[in-house]
Amino acid sequence: MAAARAVVPASWPERTAGAGTVGRMTSHDTLHDGTAFQDHYPPDVAACFGCGRLNEHGHHLRTTWDGEGTVTRFTPGPEQTAVPGYVYGGLIASVIDCAGTGTAAGAAYRAAGRTMGDPDDHEPPLRFVTGRLEVDYLAPTPLGVELVVRGHIDEIKARKVVVSLEMAAGDTVVARGRVIAVLMPATME
Ligand SMILES: CCCCCCCC(=O)SCCNC(=O)CCNC(=O)[C@H](O)C(C)(C)COP(=O)(O)OP(=O)(O)OC[C@H]1O[C@@H](n2cnc3c(N)ncnc32)[C@H](O)[C@@H]1OP(=O)(O)O
Image (cartoon, rainbow, N blue to C red; front, side, top):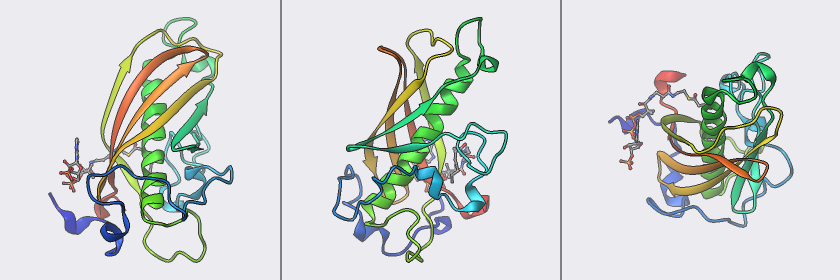
């Protein structure tokens, strides 16, 4: 356990709602302009295969606020087949993963009273990686249908955000997941 490696501003804990609490909407929260959290990732962490806008081969997953929660939408192509007509489970996990880490980043900025992409914000970026990913596959996921993942922030601490997620294909909930997102350690820079 090496808290000293955390890339987190000294002011962070005092500016959150408090360790162990669920983040709430604040008056500082202005990221409701249609841009996605991933649109504002610094270039050095914008190459993720799932959500990096700079990865030309990736999925370019984008997560936005939807009220107090978040939403991520993705329509798998036919190359994402598991068995004919149905989506590969690893892809489903990937979508939940990046929806979770994206939600964590958005929630952390919101809790800190910061706005992602604010050019006047010179504090260190809050970058989250996956510490734990859980996925329950509840129903076969049809190809050719937009998948809608809704994220809910369960817990925010200084170095950790826990997000629960639900994926639907049309009216059918096909998967549920949970992501424990942890501030990216300096060793990954
Ligand atoms: C930046 C955006 C890029 C896009 C990211 C897309 C998602 C990804 O694919 S990321 C790549 C996959 N993930 C990785 O490679 C991460 C590899 N793992 C690591 O670097 C470390 O183990 C890391 C950072 C997860 C945790 O580091 P560590 O120093 O152990 O964290 P630490 O400070 O002790 O723990 C912080 C909190 O997280 C919890 N935690 C850490 N790891 C885990 C885990 N595996 N399971 C559950 N909880 C965990 C701790 O219990 C602690 O919680 P609490 O405060 O409640 O006690």
